[in-house]
Length: 128
Image (cartoon, rainbow, N blue to C red; front, side, top):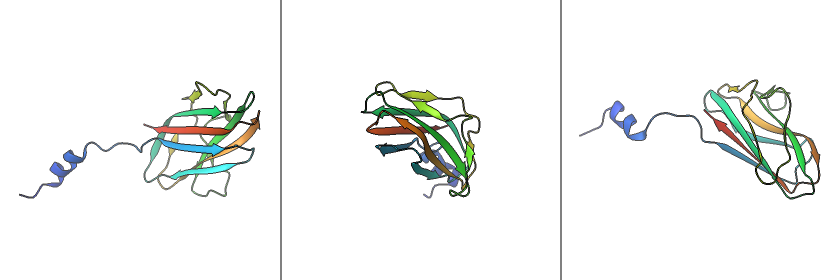
């Protein structure tokens, strides 16, 4: 017996946001840029986690931006760049100025400053 659309949808589970997205940059440098995704639908960023590996007293500041055109300046997700200097516990940001990412917009990360020669930067963007 064929399943109705409602029955099929119930087997797939509730519709939800996109899975967390990870960006990993080896030897991050000022002005590095990494495209994270193109939103398949409107998304809301709820949290950004970041951690560094290696280096002597490392610190990296970065900005998350979104827009329809990746060559443009885009819209900043936070009012100031996020800074991470921990190689153990990392840093979490939940105070987001522009967390709404419209469908078909790109989301990218831009490194604004680096000190202490970190070996790598890992950033995880969580959606709600």
